[in-house]
Amino acid sequence: MAIDDSLFSDGSDLTPIEKAILDWQNETIAKIQESLDNTTNGTSGMLRQSFVPSEIKREGNTATFEIIAEDYYKFVDEGVQGVGGENKSKGGVFQNVAPNSPFSYKVGMKPSVKHFELWSRVKGLNPFAVRESVFRKGLTPSHFYSNVMTEEWIDELSKRLETAGAGTVEIIIKESIENGINN
Image 1 (cartoon, rainbow, N blue to C red):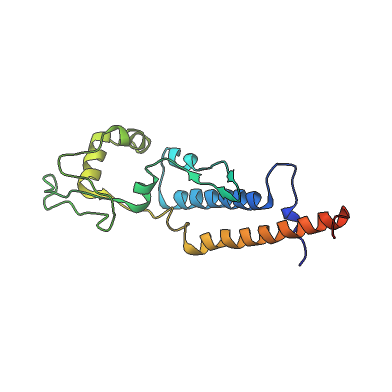
Image 2: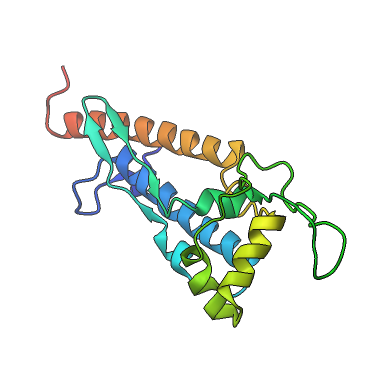
């Protein structure tokens, strides 16, 4: 097996496995941001910019990491069920735009208008009207996150970690041979 040159140190303190994780995190964030750009239209950019890789934490033989983002990404991704009700201005009832979402508003518990102020301002809309509409209809799911974080993409991380692990063993063997430590 040939040694993958990308596994060698780039001057940082990262191991090949940590480098593989960081590269995957950065690619994942780029994919999530692109997906968000393609599924939402004209927002403030706060959610997009909130996606950052965490520091990789080492504990013995394990490395842990996460991708950090604003908590509300889940609601934008999976949508929120509205409470419905009678649409007095247009007649009929408000149609729920996220009937399969695990999240829902509750009657009598409207979200704070502050959650809609910036978005409404960007769109030139009244934040109180936006809040009422979202409360009644719900929030349409965008699946910007779940379309990226598929089993196939997570399997890609596993493949990269296998390669990095094999590369680490090869590097150790090569260094041992070069240093005359091979018995």
